[in-house]
Image (cartoon, rainbow, N blue to C red; front, side, top):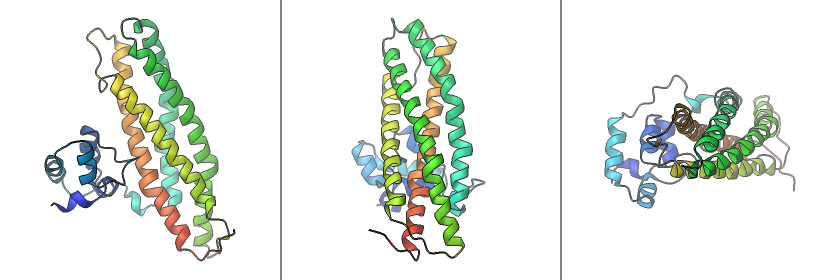
Length: 243
């Protein structure tokens, strides 16, 4: 079996960002469920792994991104997530909310699924706003503080739950947000507008698809790079755990 089969989805995307679009096409979750091996993920989704591997190999095995996220400090990666993904979400959600509200109001009678889509997105919006606030006000500052202490050669004298507890909570919330957007994707037939869709209808679907794609990259950076590196850094330092 090809060596890629035994690698996790997260490892494959981290090593080669081009894999993300291939996994998206096959609806293989590389962010919230990125710890599965490619073999496991394909088996669970009844997808021929040979086809996926062939596409991955054709995409190349180098990561030509200008930014190698593994080489960033935790503070730099946190700042990138906020400036790139958090800001995108904050800017995009009000517009998307408006589009979907208008579509549900004007087309909900003929397309009742849009009422459900709007309701789900309202929940996504509320949860994401609170989620990002907790990351920016609590978790990310804690990660940066520990990194600074280590760089200054200080002992990190804190309980292990100082990082683990908020990380566990953030990962659970990532799963929930991902599940809600997956439900929207199913309700919209993979963001396929109906024949009678107006311009706002079409725009809302395109925006939703872009929003979900950004969330997948956003969560990947946190679940599969930032959080594991933060916990590893904390675990390898000369620390005293308080019970």
